[in-house]
Length: 343
Image 1: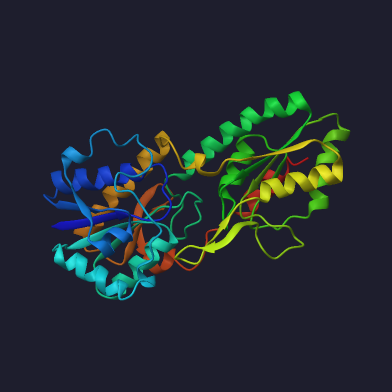
Image 2 (image 1 turned 45 degrees about the horizontal axis):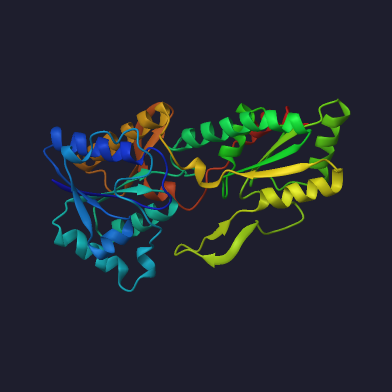
């Protein structure tokens, strides 16, 4: 078979491990020819691609980013985009396409599937908020990076009697904030699922100070919001092709507000794209490899219009429609457990 593959949306550690697994099993076990589209759906629209054979994948399992590069191109926002994409796949005589991405990338994949294209999805979102699967690769790496940062900030916070605000990724779900906050011993964790009351946050910090703990660590997801406000904190007003505004700045806003209300010296650290960069953890390398093998197996089993899925410890598949249309939120029980250590 001739199989296409692309990586869309934001990059995350583990993408190359998926590509490697697809190429390795596809070529060595099935005798497939693998074609990689460059820069996600943009490469499909512009018919830009590279041949992926065994010579293209040595040494990439430990590399971050993606050898295919990526973009946030939305096929449906381009004139006759879906038809152009379908024509590209036909012109390259592809029997199937593997799309690696999150809600946006897989949303395009679903539309192509509904138009008759044979598509298989692989779940990718560093926020770990994609429905239909228990874990996405890249999340564990981001948590480890954030936890390491929190560990380092503990010492400087204690040395200066400061409150340190650590802003991490998490547009609509606070998985990174919750996991890294628990692992790093944060004193307050703020997530998009639970709008927070600023006065309650300040009261928690004052309670620590009253116990003789003159420094604190607050972890906040970029999509967290004040209870008194409807909107998230954003950077500029420009939207990407999928209608998303760029989030960021809640850490700085929160630091200023806390210092004003408590008098405690407060600083903000925004981890940003550091969470996406560098080598994936061993867990993410293994998970991404399993997803890649599952995806090429799904192609040969005719499981089109579906997404590879981790259910417990088992790899299976679910309809693309099950993965789209809603975000997988942080388990309230997990957050309640984390709140035991607040203040």
